[in-house]
Length: 164
Image (cartoon, rainbow, N blue to C red; front, side, top):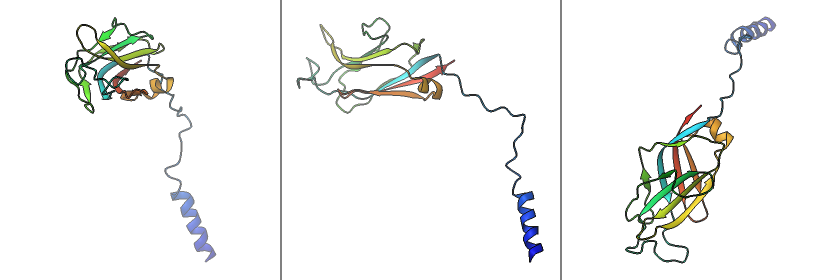
């Protein structure tokens, strides 16, 4: 019995240790470098405020807003960097998507501003927006999209391609 127990223990030592050996010359994988820039390829508005803060309709000619967005480096929305086309009559609950974009985020260390507007004549109405920074964790993990929301009911996904 003692010999049987010793043989079983020897078999465990020999056969039980086959997949655990490490090559002492193998270097550990380095952490990926954070991305330095990105291109926004798609924007989705998952939710937006259906009415003005005072309860009025956004559009002066119908009930629903004609939505477009501005995107800018920094903290000012003045339409100088990127302004999208608008979608007519965006009913509450509609997911609005702009595809095939190529908006450069050339400096991920700077803050970025995003705002949505109702296209009107003679003056467009600012609906809501937000400012954000791309975090080091996001730049390192490189998720397929950045999602942002604010207290006014805006939820946006910015689909990105990352670059070193």
